[in-house]
Image (cartoon, rainbow over all chains, first blue to last red; front, side, top):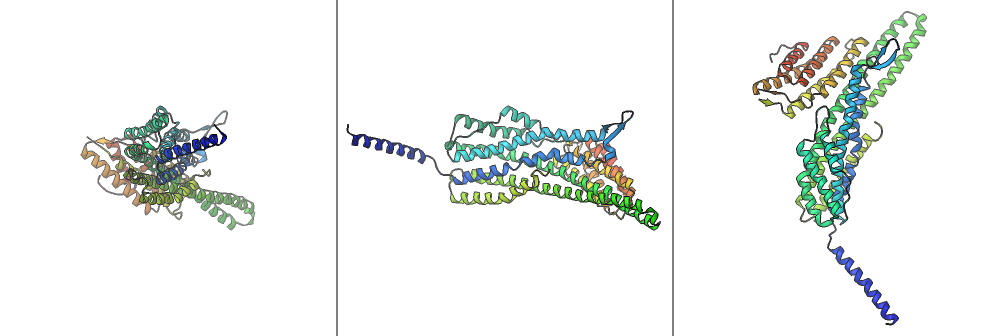
Amino acid sequence: MNLTSIKYQRILSVNILLLISYLLQSCTVNLPAVREFSKATVASSSSFDGLVDDLPKSCFRRASFTLPGDKFLLEPPKFELELTDTYSNRLLGCDKYKVSVLGIVEAQNVLQNYAEALGKLASDDVVTFSTETAALKNALQSIDIDGQNPFNDARVGATMKIAEFIFNIAVKGYRQKKLKDTIEIGNENLYELVDGLNDFAIIYTKILESEKNTVKSYQKNVLKTEIINLNKQIDNLEKMGKRFDSLVGLLEVRRDQLKGEVFEAESSIILVEEKQSGAKDYMMILEKISSTHKQLYESRNDLDSQELIDLIKSYSQELIPLIKNIRHAFIEQS
Amino acid sequence: MTQLSSDEAQKIMDALLKAQADLNNLPLTIDRTPEEGEELHRLVLALGDEIDKIGNIAIVATGEELERVVNGLSIATENANGAIETLNNIRKAIKIATALIGLATAIASQQPGPILSAAKSVLNAAEFQVEI
């Protein structure tokens, strides 16, 4: 065999490999709509954790507006600070919310993993999934927000079905051929999962409302009332002559301090209102995920249609300001 | 026997949250001492604690009894809210807030009798003569 022949054979081998590779690739379809749905949904769900983490934080913030005299008992003879029963129970109640946060975060992870799986399958990649399903079930069933669990048995079941399905396709290394089945499983179960998250948001919104009412009460009934009272005292002392100037000065210092606290309370109210707005956006995103997924399911036999591509594009655009608002409301200011 | 629906429980919770918010709407022109202001704040906070406990209430009663409870709660919270909006005396606000805490505690007990009795106390505090 001469050199030319060896060279020819190598070129032929490379060409055959390229052809095989091309043929393999041509078995899969480019599905930009599914990939875009996946990308936008993952981006939105990754902004949710701050909101869920705020559940116990809101409760603790509200408890912090307990009047100083109602927080601690001065126990003689040691005069050590001891929490009053009311304040202690309030803090314990807030602490209990932390267990529920784990369950809600796990549910959100399933939503995010599902969206990620759709994107991977659409790109003909293998799916990864690391959630332990037994722990997931336990976390969902352990949610207890003052006796309320937005994940009833049907919702736990639906969330588990999605998780187990993704786990299965990850283990078996399925690719694009399983995409349609995945969307069908999603259609059967995703809406229950989303409804659970939505109900959590309703509970959280009420907790925020109570926090806002409490801050407003502190601002008005405690701080502003004391300022009015100080103003009256200052007026009376001023009428009594210059000999009370130093006392007037002291009262004015206290009044200025209280005015600063009124301003701080106002900032706290604004932050709570931003969180309330973030919670509304969260619910809006969940609604959009559900309705867009329904469209995806209805188009499951024609996933590369231009109509679906356009619809997902607008879904993606609509999510951007909502995600931005949620990130702004829950970015480490709490 | 019938059970209070989850929607009805949420409506009760919303009505009490509105009452809690309304207690903050009393104008500062209504005379109050700092002690009275603190007392009112303490009640607003305590009302929040009790409201937290009623999201999952499942009152079970006969259909007629449950209807009386739902109706009574609606009348009591609506009249309390109406009374708070037109109050001109801080002691009255404190009286209504105290009665609302009693109502929220009774709701959490899920017993129709104590709920109706607490609803009547709210109406008395709000100085309304309505039969429930």
